[in-house]
Image (cartoon, rainbow, N blue to C red; front, side, top):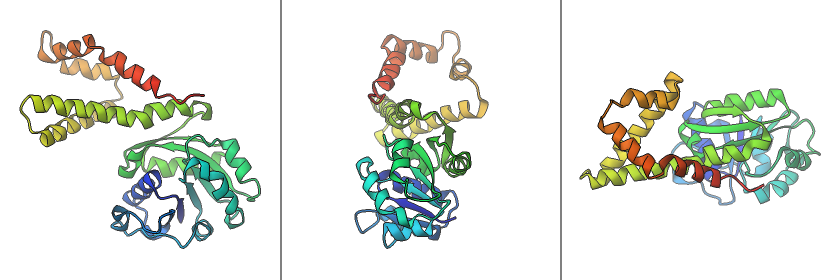
Length: 258
């Protein structure tokens, strides 16, 4: 399946990396970007730049639109004649609605539109992507593609702001928690790089416990805690410092303004 990625920057590049990791051949991917050179990490995967946006779109069954939000309208309108009927357009441009995309592509016959909101962990096939579309078949195709890059969920478009906070901004929140664990390890006498590796693996293991079991996180917490033990003392100290409230307030503060 030929796939075009218009705008192979941070997000577009992450999608490209994830697709290669998921088994797509580099020759199936047609990348474009304003700069005429790809980052070294993409070149190492065997990826190359298409001659132009028009050439990439004309060759593709699926087109990811990963350009800056303010460029979506002019880029899509310049490509109307290049789209083939049945092409699935998946926009990952933040804040560009399905209705905006429909207007931008109204002269492109037979194009099917999906709006997606992934996070950059899709590059490791460990991402989270919200998807919305009025076209069930296009939505199913997008869910298959993005599902190969992590968790892909169909989500009401009007609630995409919540997904931005929880899965997009939440990635940085989780990394800040990782940094805090690294700092604690350093104070305990563990070298910073080793402490970071240890706590990153701890976070990965904790996530896997919940994802594998389907249990509520507190059920897994209870498995670790013993009465009067060190774990519950540490958890209670964190709560006295406002841990849960701080996390909730931080995520709520990350909600986009309406």
